[in-house]
Image (tube, rainbow, N blue to C red; front, side, top):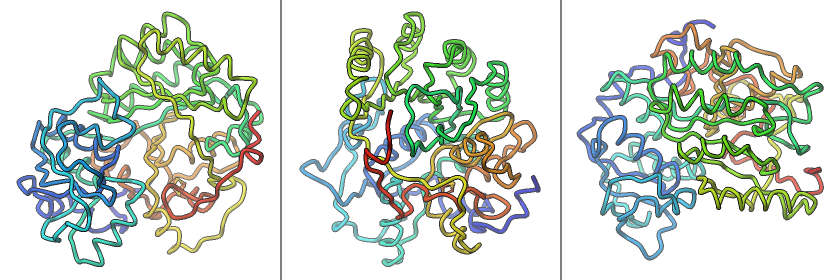
Length: 403
Ligand code: SF4
């Protein structure tokens, strides 16, 4: 792809020198959004920049209940609430209701779900703000010469035990789903970590990852070689496959997190199997959380373009909070949905949508991760409803066609 440096998109962020002047490391900031992103942001910044370097005046949210001081920052996130492993050594951070914010501080927005809502609010009140991902990428790079990527997803297999019509990885669209070559996955991982110093979330996905015959090799390879560069190693599974004992032991001893998508209330025939698997995770003290209140949304059809104008596409892309970059066959995609769409062969590969992980400078990788693409969006955005963009197309259980 062409040089990202020539791109005009998000001009205010292009100049990292200017950014770190405007967002000075000495300033005390107000964080907007008591969310799991907020917890991860604080944690990643403490790891990357040093404990307490990010100075927090207080955290604002529109949903502050009885607590106004946090001794355990995990309390603000349902995802990390129970976690004994994910801990942050910060005590006494104040939680303030949005009505009590007095507009006198620079703000870092620390939520994906309410990003747009808070942006509108802060713009209406002339408050200077930025998004947490800008700080999380640019500060470590400029102050510590470290490349930090927030999240990267690696697809290990296209095969799955379920078939959801509106799967956001588009699994039903694969005509001949395959398991990926182990050596290709390993070489992708090596290339990635030869340039990336730290990733907050490294995510193995499928299909169903535990169907992949070499999943233990992949997990062992990542842990042996790169666990010091990863905050959270997560595997998303539908709970229908019991991992082998040796793999369970590997997961347990290395605090790998399993995110279990539990569809048993919709699919009685898998209930026995899934409950057994979850029980085993509990018995073996595997770090896991079960997501059983899953709502489905239609991300769009990978064969049908909406027909948005260039301006609409840039706006749509800018409002999307897609966290998942995709690492696949030497390419680092901005969006993992895009990665999977290309792998189905139904959506064309476009060199706007990825950078070659073997042939990109550190600064260009960071800029690409921050959303600097040649076009100002990725081409798949015209097929896609996006994340937290305001477009929500719920999919009923009947339509989802789980089977
Ligand atoms: S709009 Fe869709 S394709 Fe575009 S970045 Fe967001 S999730 Fe990815």
